[in-house]
Image (cartoon, rainbow, N blue to C red; front, side, top):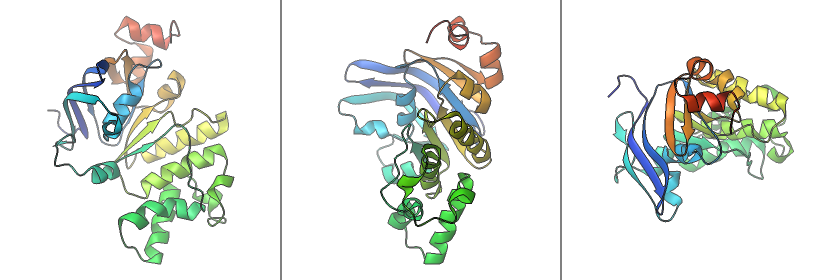
Length: 253
């Protein structure tokens, strides 16, 4: 077992009914780094992300072998409290989904459900989450207007703030920039670089270029296998496996 790893994945395989989606994944993810899981469509990246906070439990007929440890705790142990696990490991999806309420209430929603907070404390939690998601300066004067009036990039940062308000340790992001324009994409990438000071981030990037801009380490997935992983600069400039090289240089995918 590696010292100082936040998440340790050992021989992890996952299947939907009889079709394998992940095969024998072995990977250590360190605290406060951005790890990018990249590869072509249907390579297992989203299943990999969802396995990390057991969103895959919702799929009938699915199953797994192997282990995933979060701070040495087996997340698939039957005694694990799923609500608590998903607070520790929060997930942001590709399409931003603000709730049809104010900006403030979107961010306050989770903390209100989970614990009794004074009005003052709740306001502090909301401000901190919006600052961490690099959105505070843009919305501080209109916190009580509808979140649905925000731009796409702002909505995505709001969804990140909503997760951050629950004080997670790990953030999972599944193509958070897929529907965004270049300016919004740049603001999300800048946000991720700020966030890794405090959080472990596992990202399925929009494309290889995005992975190379924001990731500290990266892993190439193909047909449910982790073909190779390592420091991002090495994986993107001097990949060890020809399949990674072919994908990174655009020969397929």
